[in-house]
Image (cartoon, rainbow, N blue to C red; front, side, top):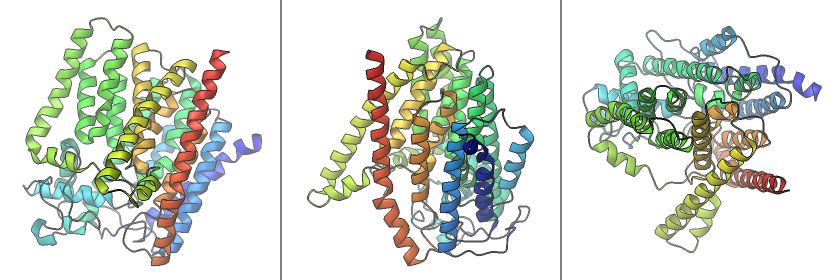
Length: 480
């Protein structure tokens, strides 16, 4: 155990180093081309790794990352890391380019379209200005023909990036990276404030969030909007005790960034109701007023097409989802409508059951007891189990959807499911390495798609079985 604990720092050092190396290099199968910027840094390493090389590097980095996190869980660090070390890591991110997907190109395109006075919820990047715009025209397959599916506040932030970056793609993305790093800082700051009286929870913040290379690679180095939405969720949970209006503003911001993150509103209301909050009626009115302050103007400005795109976002499945083999199997003898109805119906039922069981588990063992305020404790527990049930069981799920799970996990006391989440997230992350649909050799593409379709879904099912087993084991213990 002592040897495992001592290995944490070397493992994390190598994992972070390899990940930053990929981000600091030039275009690869993991990193889309961005061109040169007027004020943003270019690639630091004059290196064009092959798709096989960059995939191998990422697999090694992610495996070492998982071992480093498990080592930290086995033997917690003696104290939290100083802020200067967090600042150094954040500054290093700003010297790299995002990798692991091409979503940041989509963000830049939607902001560019909005900045040009057109509707990013109606215009596709490839059709806008005949695909000749230097920013919108850089969007890659398969998203070139897809209008925005993000909330209007996300579009507003993307528009700000476009206003600063102008027609320069690299500068626009770099401004977005700045926002992402600030959101990462903000989450750590709020987590440490929420755990001010619990030293173990504060150290878990660094093990599971700040210096977790799996989460860092996906959310920060990948520059995903989910990190910003997660910060708004945490802001709502942090302010719900004394500032209902602020909790409403944060809840509305989360919903208006990405609709699934609006679940925090239900959690806040549940927490207040569960502990019989004094002046509940007034608090709810302030909460709803704060929500309206953000949601109403942002959706009015965005226009009616934002709702159409929200509806269009449903009905898909991802190859690494546990439902992938189920859907592919049902397609052999059922029509597409029946496959969709069965798989999505079963997923919805299992999500509800999993969330209910997870909530009971958190209550039975007091897993959220590091939070002093009772209503906030209830809201954190419900947000955690609802979002976790969604990412574990949704037919369409990607590694960066786990933002809230990893953000709130440090607020819960150590439990056996920590290791299960690490292993499951490792395989989800591996499933989407290197990350691009272009620039990848056919042999590497076949291998990665095979891993995504034929390995990760079954690991996800194994993780679900393990989590259900923990629930039933805990029930048997508590009934004795």
